[in-house]
Length: 231
Image 1 (spheres, rainbow, N blue to C red):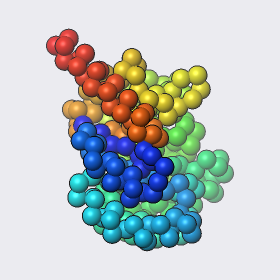
Image 2 (cartoon, helix red, strand yellow; image 1 turned 135 degrees about the horizontal axis):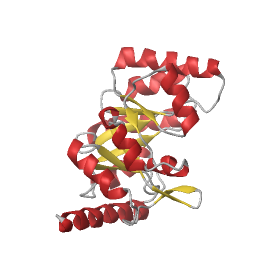
Image 3 (tube, rainbow, N blue to C red; image 1 turned 90 degrees about the vertical axis):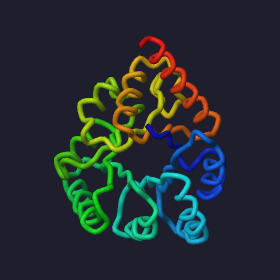
């Protein structure tokens, strides 16, 4: 199991957050957040690309693709593919079958050109089902918070699809809100940790501050200690 964090632990750029992450011993990887690839993002990435590539030797990098995806976003994939191991894609929110078909055609073309390391993130039952119909069998990035909001047991859902999982976005959800720090009290967490350790999954603590990420890491340590104490 490798613990990772998003590229927003503190306010700052991708490189500034990577430099911070590289200084923290338990962080093995970082997911570069590109919710949009607009003019400002292009400008900052062009300035920081060399530094990010250099830090990829110390950190396992993934990249969260823009939502919605468009043909122009291929430039982001092309620029980062030399040092990014996994690309995480949201399925389209739009229920229009034509939108889903365009998304599948675009993502399928990138898979053909850049390799199979494009993961479908679970963002809800209906978007996930539409993506599965259009582009079946993609590797998966389950999201525990979204699964909880949909009334699913994350460990059970993920375990049923374990052969396709490459990474997991791990966070808590309570009272209709997700992206909350793990506490160690989650009933599903020990089973998920067991799967992640057995299969050496990348577990990204998808919370957006260093304080929350550190709290989640401590919760995982406590859950592992409790499990080992019962053996």
